Image: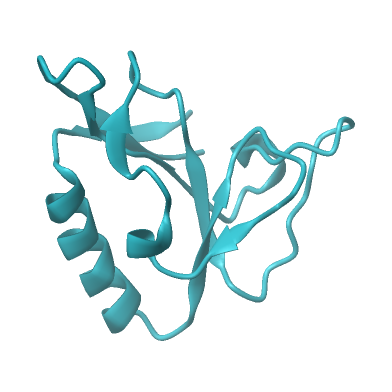
Length: 111
């Protein structure tokens, strides 16, 4: 069963919280975008393009937060998902809607 924490945060809020995590844990982490086959890693939350902006809904973009040295497991199509990477934390960023009418919730989840 997955454990989830939903949150509302701006780009500045997310960078503030995640940068504290990046500084305080004893190992390096990476953010890997889910659903992609290129396995691009972002070392810091502030490096994630478009962080804090969503087009229309929660979960339209998500990342796995993993130890930098951990191997990325993929599905049969070569895509990254949390189900294949059980030692990861899923991070769905929160964000301002594209029409700037609201703040869409984000989520952290573990399996």
